[in-house]
Length: 310
Image (cartoon, rainbow, N blue to C red; front, top):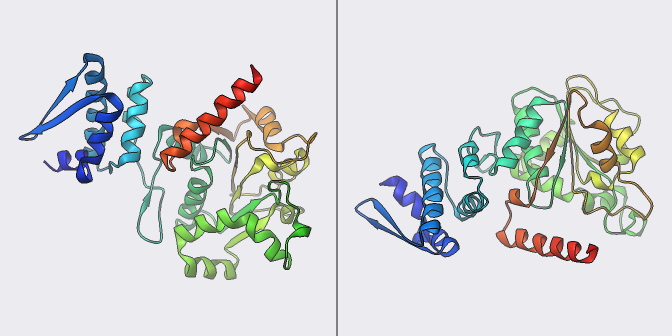
């Protein structure tokens, strides 16, 4: 009975999604579900519901986002991947919320980080590239696998230059690093974050600050790496020290470099694919875990790009 309640969701919102997307009607009579509609749609709805019930029995939560994801998998003929969902908690936030991979792509991303010293992760906005990397870093720090978390980004954003921003150097770079702060605050809470920052266990700095250093016993995340030059990427990757792990994240479709400058991330993906100890994780719009409208917006822009190229 609890599984049925979890399946239907608050005010039956989960089952309404299944009905609306697959054009079926689902009724519950004495804990027995009946699906009516066209035969093909009924078969798809049954697969979605079986997958959702399987997740509930494995102790996973079911919400609208997860329902939409399973509908997409079944619609695309990828229902076999449903069994891969769920799994280990990689970190618990300051508010006690467990962090897990929510999609097949995210699970593969987490596994890639675990298996490799360096991970290059590419994908569109909203796929959890930065958030999951920070969660993995905090998990490794709490387990005393590393002594420091270092988060960095190139200070290149939509054509702005640091010199035009008000304030001292810290004020100038803070806007570029804000997404990294937000993820750390969520995992640790503001007070714990500040304490670790003062002790030197956490460092958040622009990429230029990495030059000339060797980073041992650290979990290092380079975010927005599509905005690195080839020289910057080589400099960063060669900072790797003993007992350290590196995650490089970016979206190669959103480069803000000046015309004529090659993205260091694009080059690294080409040169380092297949190198032992380096893993590559490629997330797609199927792995977007923000509001479902984000996925539709990205698809609309991608359709426009294809139209322009035609």
